Image (cartoon, rainbow over all chains, first blue to last red; front, top):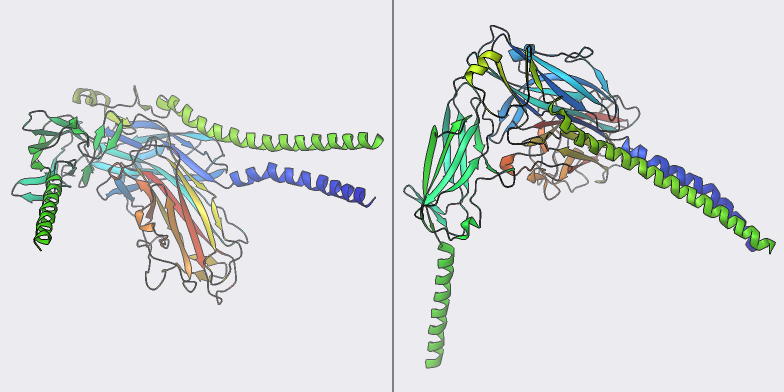
Amino acid sequence: MKKSNLQSKFKKTFFLILPLILISFVFKPSQIKAQNISLGIYPPLLEAMIQPGKSITQVYRLENQGETDLALTSQIIPFKPQGELGQVELTPEQNSPAQEWISFQNADLKLGEKFLLKAGASQQIVLRVDIPQNAAEDDYYLTLLFKNLPELMVNQSASQSQIKIGGHLLLTVSETGEPPRKAEISEFKITNAWFSLGRWQLIDSFASPLFNLRVKNIGRSLFKPMGVIQVSGWTGQPFVLDLLPENILVGSIRQVQCFSPEQNQPIVCQLKKNWQSKLLIGPFQAQVSFGLDKVDEQYSQAVSFFAFPFVLLGGLLVLFLLFWLGKKVKGYLGSK
Amino acid sequence: MIKIITQFKSLRFFVFVFASGLGLFAFSHLAQAQSSIKSENYEITWPNLNMAAGGSTSPGYKMGITTGQTSPGLYTSTGYKVRAGFQYIHSIIPFYFKISPWALNFGTLTTEVLTNEQSLTLTVNSGSAGGYQITVQENDPLTSTALYTIPDTTCDPGDTCTHTDAGTWTQTTTYGFGYNMSGTDVPSEFSGDKFKNFPDAPGESPVKVMGLTPGEGHQAERGKEAVMKARINISNIQAAGFYQNILSFTAIPTY
């Protein structure tokens, strides 16, 4: 009797708790999911060269892939290059005349106005750039930024997140389409050379030469260096690394990277370890040559290097010395 | 016999309820997966945007994404040259950024402990970008409605930190608000569980918490994740109240 009472109590408790557990399973995921915010933008970069008095439009796609509806606003902010690797510093405190040339062509949305982007929804934004007839022929670097407007949290100690996402606009105003472009090779060297001897850099045969190319834009318009680093030696067989065509903005220096057509990815400018499966030995010359926005040899510079198996020979020498020393010690102990 | 039938019926009922529960549970997860598939689909449907989102037009002309040079003659006739996206990247996966959860809710704070911690996960899809950076900045230090503040931490006296330099935070007598980063593409100075404080707007510029450039080895890919661990430590004389601020996360590509 006592046992059946216990069983009945257990069943009652079980069936009371079970729905609660199920409800918690049903609602828990949605509670967690509702906590994120997200934004996506395409294209992330727009490059346009426009004549004074002309206009262009570009369709942007803005997406809210998160679980929260977002109240958003938009902004055009000037930026300047930061460092030598393509990073930027937004400068909202500075004004650019180009900010006035940009507007949205959407019927229901103006630049700077608040709008709602529901969770899972996307918004097409038609950006219009109108270059005035009297605009100075120059480069203008801007970021189209979207940000959410955080809502006040009540009775909580918390840090609330504001999400901002942007795409860059690189505008060149030019009457002819051929703005004055000029480059300067600030540095071209092998970074993993052991030491330099006159104009020669010495490198170990088993190390893959790693090149550092820094190019400065001293012209009045951005450009992309397009060309190669070609390594040639006494074998007569040249080895080629393609330069990555990245933008170099006016007045800035950029460390130029290379591109692997096989991997379809940017790579560091370094000859591969299994370079033709041959030992790199003897005198070599590496020459960088590139054109601005077209493959050319307008700019070029060379470095000479001498490859020798220093580590291998050093190791052999140490082994020989140890062997010789061992023999000497053995002879000395034997004579005693 | 009757007892056995009753027990059998009750067992059937139990199995029915349990199966229904399992079904509901499974359904709730299916719904979650659906949502995730949907967001994946966006990436798959983006290729159609070559014509829509990527297209550039000018009065009287229409132009797709250009990857080469147009001749000066053509430029004079059209009046513009436009290139959308990176020349060497053919992906049109949107540059995408997610913060989860959207707030660091610290609840009730305990004094003089290093366990008042909350985390945010930052996720980036950098498929269409040559590189990217995520920066952070706070609008103000944590401030209560009565305008008391929890200052930004300066870390332990032996290894101090600022909003640009990381330091050690292991002492319970070190007070303030700070953060540490871990995961993919985070600056190396956070290694060894080092902390920084947040730069204050507008005087202090935003600082990078995540991101890579091609020169640093950036590979275009989806689902890059980093975790921001934020910590508050207060003394026992800190004024009571609800302390709040806003952390602005900015995601921008390289150029």
